[in-house]
Length: 316
Image (cartoon, rainbow, N blue to C red; front, side, top):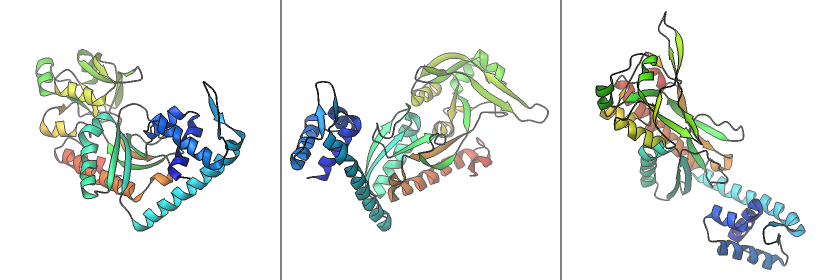
């Protein structure tokens, strides 16, 4: 009996579907089906009751598989303990990251990491959509915002100010806004998630005697469910956008866009490295965490040195 066959059987039991388990494990359905048959042949019993539309556990499967789950968990934990004790930096990283941050910042950093540790391999899930660690077969996610689920584990990487930005070419044609109300006369570039258009911008002024908050809804000129596309539109001069200072950092430093209305602050975000379990926090993940902290601090420091961000952003 092969452990890999047993892992397939456990996934079939979890999804109640050979097709879904095969998709999750990135294998052919025939391969997954053969693994189930080998395990059943070795045991001499059928673990599943199959119909034309459904698959469910047999009475033997209901008794046998929970013990297998516990045993596999112990084996995985033992393997992880050895790796932790020996500080082995190897294995596959299954990383989810948002489109803009991933393509332009994080994945190039991970490429450098893999050159330093050649036994590490990568599966990248680059998307702005909501993720499910188990459905999407992920180990870690680099995401803006602390984990909302108390069952998840997370490490804060850095503070991330958000900035109102536009290209010099756009400002030359349409003028430079000085006050939040001026934005009503400008073209907004927005991010959209699951048909929800994030077209309301929030600002606050903390200058003595002028303390006030503003909620502004500019004209939605362009919108997309891909943050990298919104950034590209902004660089191309299509309108104004509110972007993470990390996502837009290289464009700011190169002068492709400029930061606007410095007296009016936008709610600050945070970047976190999130994991579904303690078992996923391997020596490799800890090194990645440290690398992300080091690289983001260096990039934010460049923005601080250019006067684009306040020094307080570098504080924990």
